[in-house]
Image (cartoon, rainbow, N blue to C red):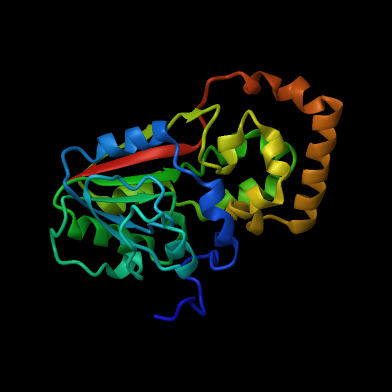
Length: 257
């Protein structure tokens, strides 16, 4: 494949914005612990939509699949290089690995069901997915400032029952609590640190912003800045600055064979 795809593999092109992704989106160790525990005693794992390697377990035999050249280039040297590929046609045989994982990526897949079936096909054991519950995204305080961002994001995220149905078998969905000092810079990762969302580099690593109404986004960011300066945000949401964890929309989906 060419170094950069002429057409993105998903609904957002990470070839340009992805340049800052690895800096902002550092895996949070507490979220990582939940993901790795869900993999059980797997020794070999395929990581689908692996990106820059966030949440990829070390010490296991990992096959990373990632369609974006920019994202592949940001993988740290201690991780194996990623294979250029997409979820709907994994370059593995049936039951090739002990487990399959995909973290905050399935909403990017053009054919969700095909990708999930492929994960199930190649994994002898659990399929572990981190995604967002679209039914709860608009409960976040950002809806006061840029509601179209969250509405659009909810439209991008697949319903959890659709995910479970495509995976088949025994599927358990549980919330992933977000810590106050979360090192993974997705939007809700800054639930108690709203100033971070004023940084264009932070927003560039969060694909949701690109799907909102851009005039509304500009107004919303300006109003958030004004509310932070005046104290209006803290009057409504200041308790979040000291709340140790936040139950937002992040979900852990584990499908057993």
